[in-house]
Image (cartoon, rainbow, N blue to C red):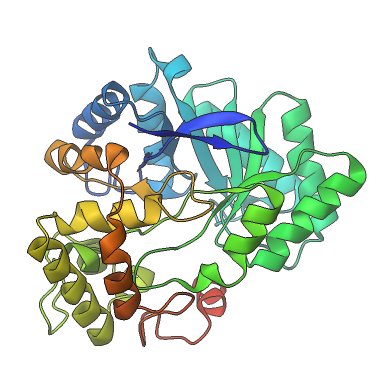
Length: 333
C-alpha cells in the first residue's frame, strides 16, 4: 500500500480509502465489520463515512468495527444533509455543525474525528460562521482536521482564506466526484488544491460501475448496483454516452491485461493532488480485488488512450444530465 502526505495536515494517509456508503445498505453489519478489518490488515488507514449514510447506521457500524483498532484508523465523516425535522438538523450553520459533530462522535464511539467535512456547500450560511464553527470543533479536540466535499473551487478557497485571515483551522481536504468519465475538476479545483496544499479524496472513481464494464450498451442497471437499488442521483449519472465510453475503457483495460475496475481507480489515484480515491466494495471479494491498486502505477502508455475517451478537463456527454455538475449536485440536495 502506498501512502501520501496531506500537506496542510502534515499527515500520511493510505493511497486508497474505504468508503462506507454501502454499510447497512445493502452490506449487512457483520460483513461490513469484516470489510473494515480486512482493509486495515491490507494497510488501508482512511475510512470515509457520513452522518446520513443508512440514516447513521454506517457511522455506528464503522465505530463498532474500529472499537479495538481505533489508533490504526483515520476516520473522515461529513455533515450537511437533513437528519431530522429541526432547523439545526441540516446545513452548515454553527448550531447544525456542532450538533452534527457531537452526534457523529456518539455513533462512532470515539472521542475525536480525524477529518470532519462539509458534505456539501451551504450558500445560505456565511463562510465566516461555518469556518468559525469548524474551528471550535478543532479547538475542542472533537475534530483534528476539517474539509469540504463536492464544493466549487472558489467556495473551498473562500473557506481556506477566511480561516487564514482569522487564524482558524482551515480546510485540508476536498472530496470531489472524479473519474475518467468526468474530469471537470481538472480545470479549477485541481490547480487550486495543488497551489494551496489541499489533498483530494475523490468519490465515484468507477463512475457508478460504468468504468468496470458492468453495464450493457442499453444502460440496464445491474440489479445490485446503487443506480438500480437507490435511483436518484446514482441513476442520473448513468447515460447511454457514459456507458459506451465506460465500456470502451473496460475493453482497453482488458486488451492490455488489466482488470477494468483496478485500472480505473489507479488512474484516479495517480492524478495530481489526489491523496486517496474512495472505494466502496459491498463484499470482501470486491475489496480483495481492489487492494492491489494501492501498489499499482498507472501505465504511462495508456494515458493518451484515456485522454481520447474523455478529454482532460471535460466530461462525457450527458454524464450528469447537466452542463454544470455543481448546479446538479446542489439541486440534488
